[in-house]
Structure formats: C-alpha cells, structure tokens
Length: 343
Image 1 (cartoon, rainbow, N blue to C red):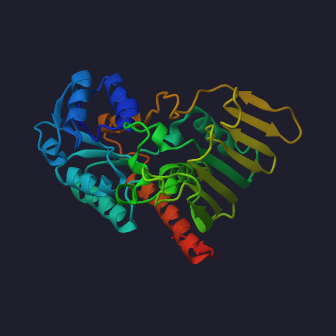
Image 2: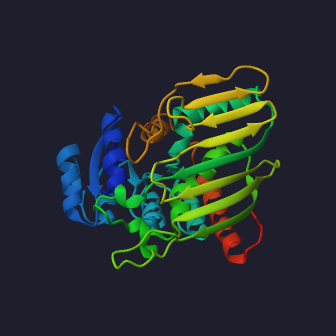
Image 3: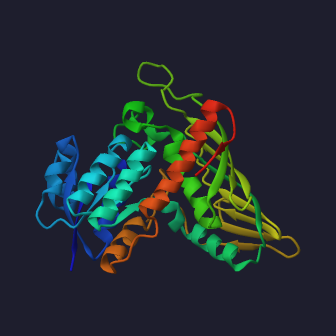
C-alpha cells in the first residue's frame, strides 16, 4: 500500500526537504501540492506528480488522501492542521506547531478526537550526531549532566526563502514570532529530548539588531535571542539563536560530571566526547541539514513509518506543545524582566 500524502505550502522547506523526502520513500505517493500562489504548486506537481491547488480545503477534499504535511506560514499551522485532522487525515506539521498555546492545545485535542496522528517536524532529534549523543548520555559514561549551551545561528531566512532576498519570517502578521520560533524552538526541543527532562524556569533577552524590511526599517520580530533555562532536575543552560551570524553555528554542548559532549561543534567530527581522565572519542556519524546543504532529515521517513506501523509519533503534538510552551515562557520573561516558571 502507498499512502496518499498532500503538501500544504510550496515554499523552500517543501521544495528542499519534504517533497524530495516523500519522493524517496517507497510507501508514499505524492497526491497533491497546495500553495496560495497556484503557479508554485503547479511547478511542484510537474516535478513530483499529483494535483495542484490554491486552497488547502480543496486539497483536503481530495478522494483517497491519507495524510498531509503542513508547511505554510506559521500563523496558518493551527487552522490547517485542525481542518486536516477533522477531515480524517494524519498530519505532519512544521514547527512551530502554532503561534499561541491555546491554538496548540486545540490541535492536540483535534488529533485526540479524530483518532489521527499529529507529528511535529522537530527534525534535530533525528540528526545522526544527536541520536548518538542520546545513546552516550543514556549510557551514563559521562555521569550526570550539569549544564549545557546550545546555539543556532545563520545569516538569515532571506537566504533560504523562495523569493530571493525577501522572507515572510520577518513579518509578524504571518510569522507570529521571530528567531525564537524559527531556530530556538528546535534547540529547546533537542535539549529537552536529550536530557529526557522538562524545562521548569526561563529567563531571556531578545532584540532586533540588524534585519530590515524592504523600506529599510528594522523588522517587527526579534532577530537575536539569548535564553537561560533550568530543567526540573536542575540542569541549567543557555539557548542562543540568531539570524545575524555570517556563518552557521548549530552546536550543542553538554558539560557533565565526567566529561564534555560536543555535538556539531567541530568542522570534521560531528560528535566529540572529552572524558575527564582519558583520551576523547571523535565520531564521524553524519551531517545535520542546513540551509546551505540539505541532507536527508529523516522526518518524513519517521512520519510514514508511524503510518505503516500504526504507531503514535514520538515527536507528538504534546512534545511540540512543550517546546512552544518554553518559547512562550521566554517571551514572558523578556516582557516582564523576571524569571518565569514553566508548566
């Protein structure tokens, strides 16, 4: 059996990740592509097959459709996901799953009521070095994790966007949030997953330092943020994200009782383990997808595997909610200039 999957949104993430990964999966047939700019959807269906639509509701009415990938603008994620679930379709939704917590909760409730799967595309969990890091942390070789630092910065979303030099990520009306919901939410989810621990407290600062709109004015969402987080078990660390780094940094470091674990922090070795009393381990285990170089993320394969085996996705709506909840706590901390409790 081949699962009939539609893609809502024909921008860069669909073109460079989701559609190629769908095509590569033997259990999938690309049934449709939708974009408000019909020509973009038609361009993709000429390459990948299926029908082109400009209204996602028409795509959802397509006979035989099993699932959809929602990768349109942030502020449309909740509306489209809920509609798809209510139409009896499984959903893989890009991050952030929503731009408000009530909307995210409504998505989870829609999945529960429909009996269909809701998965959020937090793909950093699937990067080879992150998977290996999780195994090492779980083994206990490094002892207890004490602190961490994680960074995700690149030159900006305009270098990735389908319209050269112009991106909706910089427009609050359609993005909802800024770099924290674009990059920060990835790192928050990753650290939460690697530690198997929920965040309990947040403090943060953010600002718009450099990115400007077509008129030359600073954009109306943050382009840099620095967050200080504590987990329920007491691990403390920083999350630094930026759209103004001239070269990409997508690294995570854990400082443990018996050594240091470095993930994507070295140009040649994707994972380095520095033990306190012995020589380190240097692992070449595979790259992480970047805007400059797309390698297979594994997110589509995991989603399809859940469909094939009728298994609730590990990266569920509930997991997406936890990451969004922490992001929102950071924004509350920025606004109030105080430490904010999470959950």
